[in-house]
Amino acid sequence: MVTPRDIYERAIEALNVIRDAQSKGLIHRTPLLRSETLSTISNANVWLKLESLQKTGSFKVRGAYFAISNAVRKLGVRHVVTASAGNHAQGVAYASSLFNIKATVVMPQYTPWIKIARTKRYGAEVILHGESYTESEEYALGLAKELGAYYVHAYNDADVIAGQGTIGLEILEDLRDIDYVIVPVGGGGLVSGIASVIKTVSPRTKVIGVQSEGAPSAYLSLRSGRIITVERVDTIADGIAVKRIGDLTFKLMSELLDDIVLVNDLEIARAILILAESAKVIAEGAGAAAVAALVSGKVRVSGNVVAIVSGGNIDMTMLFRVISKALAIEGRIVKISGLLPDRPGMLGKVTTVLGELGVNILDVFHERYDPTITPGYAEVSFIVELPPEEGAADKVMKRLSELGFNFTISKP
Image 1 (cartoon, one colour):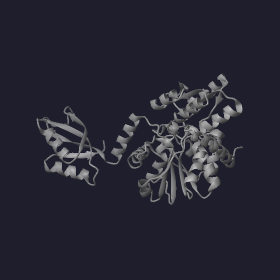
Image 2 (tube, helix red, strand yellow):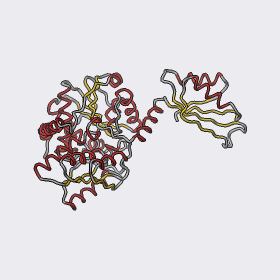
Image 3 (tube, one colour):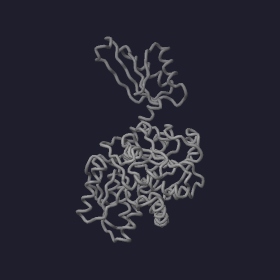
Image 4 (cartoon, one colour):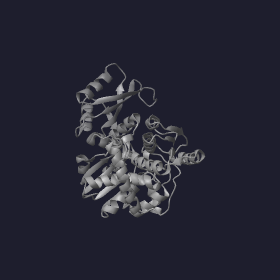
């Protein structure tokens, strides 16, 4: 039975392998940066471990590289198969290209385009199968057996977990006194690796897992004391959207984690916005989960806190939608609606006022055909971006009212 101590010792071995790759520019040693904004929000000293800046855009390359390195060196493997929601796929594809071996990757049908394209770019054969990671995994396991290939599990593998544990070793080298480490959780490989290292070296440090409400397998399993498979996953954090955690990761998390919390997609969206604005970091949904737990207050912390930003592979169209939603949540994008006489010049008067007040109009909608609207009038709605100043909404509404316009303001 694999123990946290076993994972720690393998992580030491993995670090040597990873450092050799880092010396050749094949894998990055990612920065640990303090965030003034998050420190103020959390009333603690918050540091970000930016695996979003890692090769392939996420931490996954660490575990994939170490596992494939061992498979090639010890077993002479020439073909690997895996299943992935995207980031592990890229890690396996990239590592396989470095060792000049064949990689076949099975991904869910609705995997973001950017993750599929980049996996192919690294030279892997990509097969789209199933609606979730679990269905992809079932197919990939059968395919590996059929092809006689070596299967590299995304999280339920000791070498993969140990590879992710090198993040914990780097954190300990960069920050001596750590009170909390907050880690996104999907299948549990990342948090199992980091927690095995952190708890072995610094038992007093609390390790907190964060999972999406739309994919709560680890949360439910740890609270019930047995592995629970959820029927459906639905979250913008596709990197941690798994229906079932692993047997090994369940054992390690049960033994090591001080707590695990859930965050919802709106909290994740807000965290993505805060990271982009304050830290100038682009994070995907899964990558922002730890920060979401901090800014939402789901985790109460003090002292030195490390939040793992696990990945930055977010499709630009999704980023646009997420940022727009987050701005609406914070009241910086609003909807202003009201009735206007349906005659020339009236719309111009309103837009002139909005322009004078520094309001950016994003969209305009007219409704003339609703039978409840008085003839000769039209309902007009503006989607606007308010200026970044306190009381901007009240100032706009007061000015419109002074000019005789009866408008209301709401979230889009």
